[in-house]
Image (cartoon, rainbow, N blue to C red):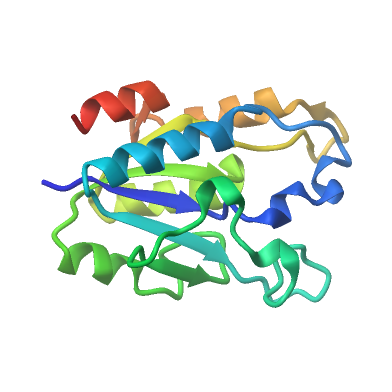
Length: 185
């Protein structure tokens, strides 16, 4: 079994100051951990799928043709690594990701990227529902502080923790970068 690595939306757009209007993000080391995962997968010649969000919204930092649409340096795809363009939160909606994974025989997925409670959670939930053996690399993901419906501000740490709790067990196993690298050895 060749475990596939999905890197979700690690694009320059995530550094746009608008994301931090309500507070800082969690896991400042996430990009470093993503780079470690990529190095480990590449060293073992394991499959990597880069997911790129191509927003259709004119004011989005992820809009196609804008500098924010480019991958961050730490997550830059290499020649031959598939790039899946999506326009929804889940990497499976409106893409051929599922068929690519199934055609290549990948039943085990490791997921990292941004935003934990948005595209990462949507993708992990669908992967679990589609029957993939899914692992969330929680310290290679991050999110931002968020206001709830009552106007209460939740820290990025809390938002991330609740999102991970939503996914853990039913949709995926939660691991750290170090644990993920040990699992593929």
